[in-house]
Image 1 (cartoon, rainbow, N blue to C red):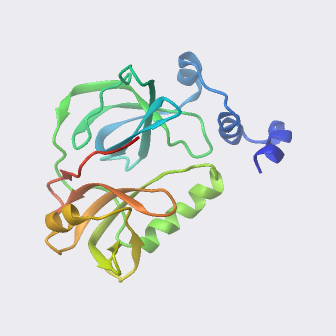
Image 2 (image 1 turned 90 degrees about the vertical axis):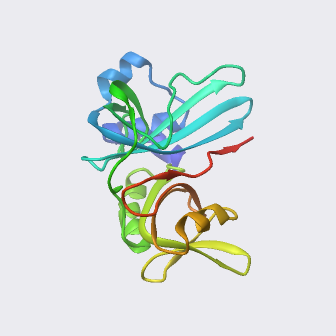
Length: 228
């Protein structure tokens, strides 16, 4: 699909062209990004973070969502093994600021172009879905626009962790389930077996929990997920 699209790149809309060129390795310089990317100002909830090392390069993925806009963003940073990331981002907090998005048919990757005020605790409910079915209904048109996305933010309300045959799942109020990536005793302890709001990363196979809100007012950051 990628090679076929590249042969017809000139016929694609600008957002699809941007996705195509980034898939084959083109990158945007800072001045190009400022001229092409769109911006959104909001109070952003820094939901969670994953770090890993791929071919001697550190990668950090931080998921955020806007309190008013409900817009999702993925702050994806790269750095050599011996150097820190350019931006210090503390998950489990909130930040007022402006995000600048990379051009795309479905803009998702972003960076802070401006921050206002200090980091603060997140107060209030987190925007999300009431059922797993609702989450997948939103996901389908996103994948249709940008089929090369690898990760997605999944926020589900009124769900609880369950275990069956040594496999952990998250179960919604309709009884539908999605697999969790590993043992979730911490999540079970925080929920007390009762429905909670859960923010996770979905990779098409399983959910990787990041943050849980037991009462729609307080957010508890689960252990930062790092893999080497």
